[in-house]
Image 1 (cartoon, rainbow, N blue to C red):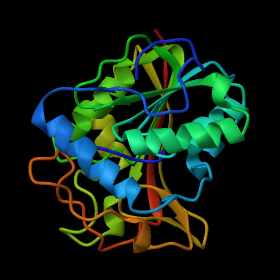
Image 2: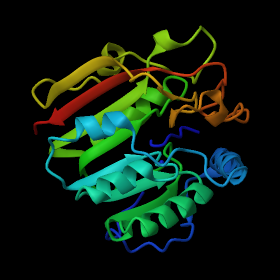
Image 3: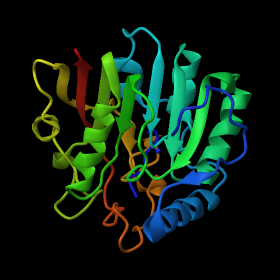
Amino acid sequence: MPHAEHHDQHNPPAGTAAPGPPAAAGNGAASKAGQEFWDDFYQARPNIWSGRVNPVLAEETAGLASGSALDLGCGEGADAIWLAQHGWRVTAIDVSAIALERAARHAQAAGASDRITWVCADLSSWTPPERYDLVSAHYLHSPEPAGYALLQAAAAAVAVNGTLLAVGHHPDDVLPGSGPPGLWTPDQLEANLTLPPDRWRIDVRESRRRPPGESTGTSGRHSAGHRDADSPPDLPAGDPGAGHSNAASHRTDSILRATRLR
């Protein structure tokens, strides 16, 4: 199950969802197994992630006018809350009801809950009901072709003049066979998204080192001073994200930011 904190929605007005866990959307045994896995993962500790925004999100959206945003794989909600605090109306989706319940509490404490709608759904079966001014997809790594398909769907959810921001672990950071499945370079992602140049402008295509002391665990969440401790165990057999390893911390991000022209 692709998942990230950030770096996992439907279309009620922002802020109408209660702080409690939303009902899950998805289909079949795979969705149920993925949700159970991630619920168990979050249940194991009171807080999994740092609660800070992913640095690339803050950097790459600094010059954008706020509007509607879609946060794919929102985890405990740090990115969604940061976006809401900076004027965005956010739809934040994750497969784990436990993570979303936690995220909603954090948003309420931060005074941002009226600008965020939380949706519990499996990204592999969820269809965005509208297009958004910003679609943020951080560390959504899955075996191919599922991984690129998720990011193609993310691109399709971007409104005209809107922004796609895709961030992932760079494959050069890990030994072969370790780390999350489906790692990509910025060039590889651009090639597989096949964004027509008459409809898209590539604004950033970059491999970027994180500042000293900042890394992400192999699950894709931003951590500062927490290496593999924040990484989940292997995913259940048959899950699209199966193959996650706890073998490495990631210090280089693959970044693709693009604007939809029409």
